[in-house]
Image 1 (cartoon, rainbow, N blue to C red):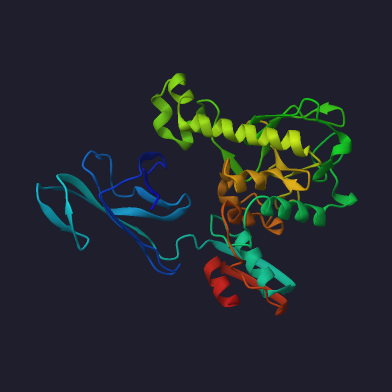
Image 2 (cartoon, helix red, strand yellow):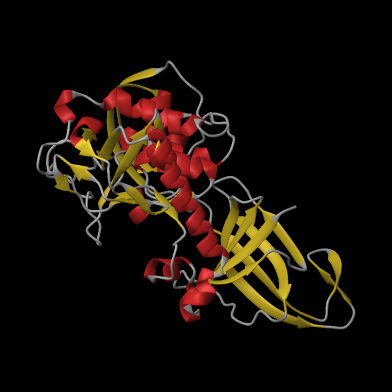
Length: 361
């Protein structure tokens, strides 16, 4: 089995990544029960403490994550009974980690009229902060990319086209108003060189996705704290750099082969009705990019160069776009929410997302 064990400190920095450990037992239960990770790490592991988080990935995707509650060094030259099994070791560290029941049960406050049970369930999940999500029917690229393009086509109309000379009104712009002569992939998740209505645009950051960096920088360090002390040459020789280069080439190929038909800036609005997440801290525009009948953001997740990224836990995502569909694009899945014809004329909810889903069930 291909697995990886990662340990993160209380600051969220990854301090350890192992693809082989002496012993590991992972118990994953229902959402209202505790998940447990128990195991033995090599004796060379010294930086491990209460409150740290352990992540276990199986065949690539995350399988279980839990917080360390117990750490105990063990020394011996013989066999010891650990987790009901005899294990040969000289010096190891035994640990236990737990994920509390109902973790991720974030608050949902929504009002619905004439919506089916399945529609309400999907909307509730998309409204909940954090990575709680459902599965949609998906096999492989370009299923998800085509799916997202279809969703764009359904919501586009003349009334929500982006204004000329600004980004305060409307949300999408078509190729007839774009000059793509200088457009190129700056990173695996960023496009530079765009012109709209004859004016240069800032770099466009593809929202909801994140790829490795092509050079050592602050964002790369935030993802992989261990590179902070690396030289530029060491980073350039790393797998992170190779993965970043692959994502950049993939995005460039999409631009060259598919073209860019539409750009949709983030349509999320604040309580006043103003768009509140269209420009990031670096001055880049944030949006979704479409070309050749595909959504580039979704294609990056499907083919693996990028992963799903929920900035702020997803608080700047419009639930109506159902962007948590993106979690399904990283593998083959079937629908986890059964279609239902049962319709509520009026249904108001203010509760944890697990309670909402239970009531709907």
